[in-house]
Image (tube, rainbow, N blue to C red):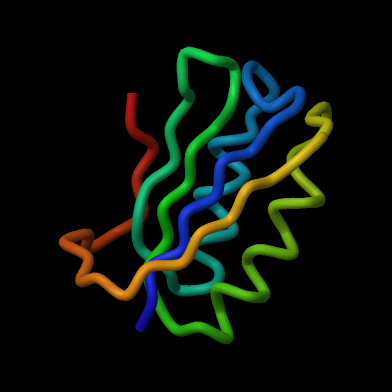
Length: 90
């Protein structure tokens, strides 16, 4: 199990992007969180099976209708997660 962090740049706030990410995370049986940041980006932490995370990461580039992804910064960590579900944080 691994933890992936993604910081997503572009038109990703106010376009149901976090809800889309939550739906995809649940679909791929991942836990973690998604959150809007003050700089207009979105932060995603996902924890789970590496194969599922790789497939999930591909879906981030698609985004919700109305979103436009300019850039994604990924990082991988080998730490334990204390998430038991996937949540939208405010």
